[in-house]
Amino acid sequence: MPIPGRLRRRIERQWLIGRAIKRRHALTLLTDRTRQIASRDILAFVTQRNERVRLPYFLDYYRKLGIRHFLFVDNNSDDGSTEYLCEQPDVSLWWTKAGYKQSRFGMDWLGWLLFRYGHGHWCLTVDPDEFLVYPHCDDRPLTALTDWLEDSGRRSYPAMLLDMYPRGALDETVYREGQNPFEIACWFDPANYSIRKNKYLGNLWIQGGPRTRTFFSYDPKSGPALNKIPLVNWNRRYAYYSSTHMLLPRSLNWVYDEDGGEMASGCLLHAKFLSTFAEKSAEELDRGQHYANSQEYRAYHAGLQEGAHLWCSESREYHDWRQLEDLGLISSGNWP
Image (cartoon, rainbow, N blue to C red; front, side, top):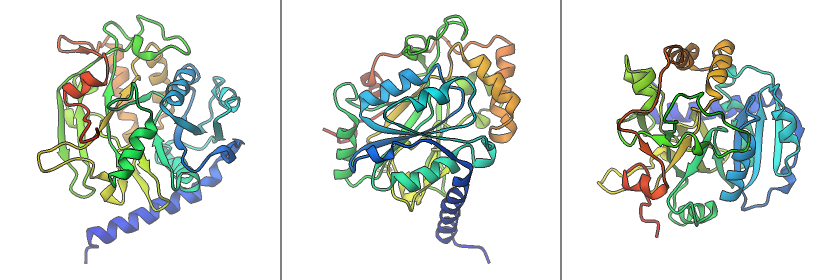
């Protein structure tokens, strides 16, 4: 007799939480500053490997937005990023040499840290190349958004992953440490996205954009997922189901309006496509630690070998969040 969906999801959620708790033994604590965390602090949870060149701008960006403490897992870096993070006054750092793929692509590690430290906090779970943009982010701190979400009874906030890219070849302009990546990767696709609903978990599944049209044009449905729910008022009963694409309980995935209106949403500007991309993709392809036998990185490698460019005649140059709202890529909802 098949297990009813609701019971099955509960079992899966408990299994994911239990798995994360067990995987804590793979983590070695290098720097513990978690005693600095205050009760209303917004926390960031990040897995990284060899992202030293990106970290200064990443930390500066989110500090200005209102993140008060960063909890990093370093996956055996050898580029100096481990030492750099240890020196940061608002970072707690764990290290592991365990397999990224075997840890559900880092989500077991972050799942444990969310369980241990995230309970009762708004928690932002992102990669070092993801930058949250939301309505009024230029003059309202992240606490203004989370306070409004909480007052509105919302526990989670979606942000579509928006791939950013340069106009020319990816290696044409060298990215410098500490530089705003969107001085180089300042273009994006304003449309060309498909959306469908995942009936089992209730989330939207978004695909398309420059990666799909450039690297997965032969099979658009195999392109990367762009739907994310990175900001959550965390409870230790929660678990990310697949990266930050969807969660359990499934009600956390209901971040859209089915009655013709719009609910508040943001974007994660994705700064993957810089001069560092070719070297990074070659490293990750060699490691073989990504989803579906690194299918995504195989497509990137093949495209780069053929001299692929992401820019096209329909590309738009990025200006600010208002432009994204005009295009329907983010929404203020009823946030005044």
